[in-house]
Length: 373
Length: 70
Image (cartoon, rainbow over all chains, first blue to last red):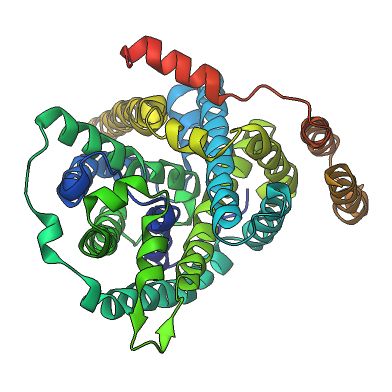
C-alpha cells in the first residue's frame, strides 16, 4: 500500500479537529449540567492512559497502520477478524457523524430539504478529501484550524456581556455516579473515537513521537472544548443547555453587539463544516484502508467511493428522527467499549510480546555468533 | 424525487468512477460492485419509504441487556 507521511504538527491539528468535530454542535455530555466542565477534565484525564496505549502501538510498529499491525502481531486470521470489526465501527461512525450534520442542518436551516440530499453533499466532499490523501487533509486541517479558532474566540468575545459566571454554581452538586457517567460519555465521545486514527498511523513519520502527538492533541483539544463548555454554560445556564439539542448554536444566536452584529449563529455551522469534514474523512479513510487491507487491494483510494456509499446507506436508515439520535448517545459509550479499549489493549499486549520475543531471539543469535567467532 | 436522486447519484458513480477504471484487478472490481450494489438496494428501499431495519435498535437492546441499563 502507498505510504503517505505528514509532519507531526499536521497530525496534531487533524486530531484536534477530530476531537472538535461533531462536539461543536452536539455539545459534550450534559448529564452533569453545570459540572460538565469537571466531567470534561475527568474524561480527558481518563483518556490519557488509553492514548498512551494507542501511541505505544504506533511506536512499536512505526509507519504502519493498525490493520497491518494486527496481521503482524495476532496472525492473519485473527488480524482479519479485528480488521472487519474496526471497519464496521469506522463505517458506523462515519454514518453517525454525517447524520449529526444532516439533522443539524435540517433543524436550523433547511427544514424542507430531504436529509438525503445534505448527506450526499457532505459525503461527496469527504470522498474527494479522502481520495486526495493525507497530505491534502493535513493542509486542509491547517487552514480549517485557523478559522475554527477564530470563530471560537469570536463567539466568546462577543458573548461576554451575556455571560453570567454564577451559572457555574453550585459546584459538585451531582453524585458520583452522575459524574462518572458524564465523564465516561465524554471519554468515549469524542476522545476515544480517535482510535480510528490508528488506521492512519502509517502517516506518522518515524522521527515524530506519537506520545507527543497524542498529548498535544489532548491538551489543545481539551482547552478548546473547555472554552466551549464554559461559554455555553455562562451564557445559557445548565437548564437551557440540558433542554437544547444544539447549545453552541443557541449561544451564538443570543449574541448581539449594539444591535449591529447579530445572527452570527451561521459561524457555528461553519465550524461544524470545517471540523466535521475532517472527522468524517478520518473515519472514511480508516474504513477504506481496512476494506482495502481485507481484500488485498493495493490502494485504499480505489474503495473510498463504495465504502462511502455504504456509510451513506447506513446513515439514511440509522435513526428515524432526531430524538432517536440523541437517545442513542446514552448507549454509545458502552457499545464502543470493545473498539476503543478492549481491541487496542489486545493488540498492544500482543505487539509487546511479539517485539520482546523478537528482540530476545535477535540477542540470542548475536551471542551465539559471538561465541562461535 | 428521492428515488430519482438516488438513481442519478449511482448512475454518475458508475459512469464517472466505475467504468473509466475497468482495467482494475478482478478482486477490486468485485468488491467495488458488491458494495455499490448493497448500498444502492438499501438507498432505493429507503427512497421508496420501506422501513429498512437499523442497527441502532439491536445495539441498544444488546447494551441494555449486557450492562443492565434502564
